[in-house]
Image (cartoon, rainbow, N blue to C red; front, side, top):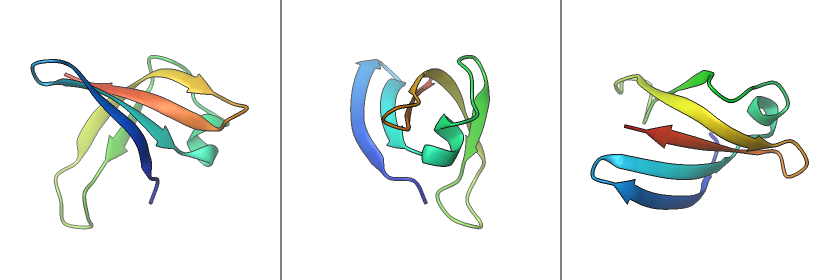
Length: 64
């Protein structure tokens, strides 16, 4: 599981999260999606990759 390092509310129902995800950070591009789940039986939530830092190996995701 990847930890959320920072969470910021940008607007009503829109959040920006920084997630420490080294494996994802090495291979993704802005505009691609990841699928997040709370647990094995939880709902699948698509999150848009809006930025990444390959040196820090973390990602920023936004969710409308």
